[in-house]
Amino acid sequence: MIRTGEEYRESIRDGREIWMNGERIKDAPSHPAFKPIIDVRARIYDMAHEDATRDVMSYHDSERDERYAIGLRLPKEQQDWHDKRLAVDTVMRDIGGVVIRVGDETVGEMWSLYDGADVLNEVDPQFARNIETHIFKVLHNDPFHVSANTDPKGDRSKRPQDQDPDMLLHVVKETDAGLVVRGAKYETAAAYANQAFVKPTIANWGDAQLSDYAVGFICDMNAEGIKHICRTGFTGRAPAADYPLANRFDEIDSLVIFDNVLVPWENVLFYRHTKAATFIRATLHRYSAFAFVQRILTTADMLIGAALFNVRQTGLDKQQAVREKLANLVCYREGINAHLTAAIATAERSPAGLLMPNQSLLFTGRVLACTQLPQMMHLTRELCGGQICVTPDSASFEAEELKPWLEKFYSVNENWISEDRRKLLAFARDLVNSDYAGHRLTFQLFAQSPPFAHLAAVYNNFDFSGPLEIVQNAAGLSDRVMDQ
Image (tube, rainbow, N blue to C red; front, side):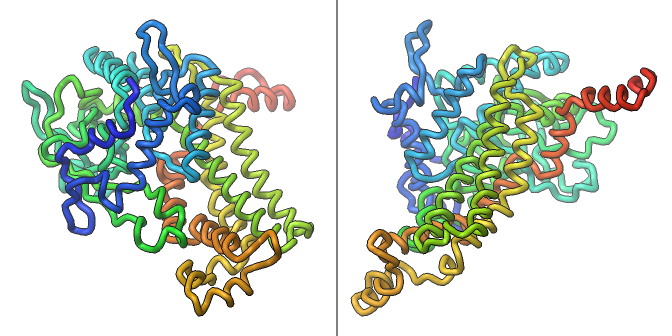
């Protein structure tokens, strides 16, 4: 069943070990650094119960006479993807910002495992059964499910076993109850999630067919031996009136320490076979990339809105040079939109019978969205002007001695009085100029693997036969060249 927001909050009050700034966090839902983002996740749960959004956020399963979350539904037809897209858009508009790691994006990685059942069956049929079991547990139990991806890595020119073994998460012992693992992973939202799909990074396997580092499993985030060492949050560093995004939407990242953590056998999804680990990594984002790129589309809308409001308030929107810059932002936005729309329209059947977005279009859309984002943020800075970096804080606007002066110099006309202008400049600053903005930019570039891996996904999913046939026919080449 779909949980309520309060049920989610209670589910993470489980004694887990969370640290931030050297302090042990005893109750994350009420802690100032965690409360805003936990409230956002709770809001998503509650939206599935409210009359206005119930049918957008959830669907009714007639066989079980239960409602389930749209974001967790296995995609089997085009309408499923339209429904998922509408649900994400509805959430972003309801909360007034962008959040990424809230479950609907990360659950798609489990569907990739579902597609890889044949490969995993070659290793051990039990692993494929475990995957199917966990996919439906996520659907029916509605946990906050995330994924643990990046290791501390160490010296990547060496094999894992040729350096400190804990630099990459690995199995240290097999027991009747399950595997015992050690190491660490970086993961966004782990400290306030229920469970994570823990997967290997691509290691330097060499010629090894088996490795204790090739392991993937489901892990409860309150398991014994797990420590969440979180980076300092952006929430509370400065007043929310001056930094409205940083104070509401900071998705806190953790270094998750696995200190001899027991993973029950039923939670093990693959183990030891490097072929399985490589396959999983290669297909990991075939579904989750859609939700990830859709978030960048919302960010593009925010860039356009902030820029357009800023130029309109002073009448600059009538200048051709300004309109050209706005048009560049629009082209970026609509380029992302076109890739997402086309990826659904030309969706493909997966090995397990699911409907996956057209892989070539989806991954080229991801490259477009990620690689051009820095340029679009800078273009927004240009259009917003220098005042986003020099405007006084909100306390100055409220100070009795300063208020008349700031009202005088920040009021443009009867439509743009000083308070609205201050709010817009504060929003734009937090969107493109703040510490939070820089953090999110880096996150977008690397959250689903680094840029070179994005391009590798494009190369591996593009059908080169069409261009080759065109040139073969146009140049009069023999059929022999197509066999190379």
